[in-house]
Image (cartoon, rainbow, N blue to C red; front, side, top):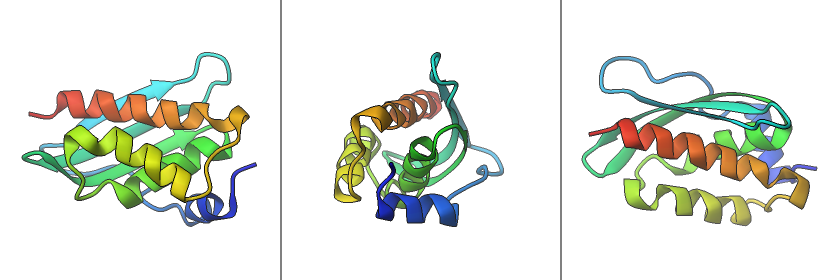
Length: 118
């Protein structure tokens, strides 16, 4: 079960939607077994993430981690974004073993989006 802090972010829909305009990179990842899917759109400025938005479907953990990414990654250095997200998950209560795929899924979508940015 998703912890209270992550559940709160999920229920609030923090960062839900898509970045608009030009200069937006997109990344997508899905889980072949459970069917969870996450789409990230982000904007960077140099080596920093400026804005991150998400669309996700699947288990509450996937939606919660996507919302957490939108909360903690703006302002982060691109090179440290995946690790920063992993630390943020832990500081927000962590995930039980059956939910850990959610972090990996969002990190893969993030890596795909960052690979599209100049």
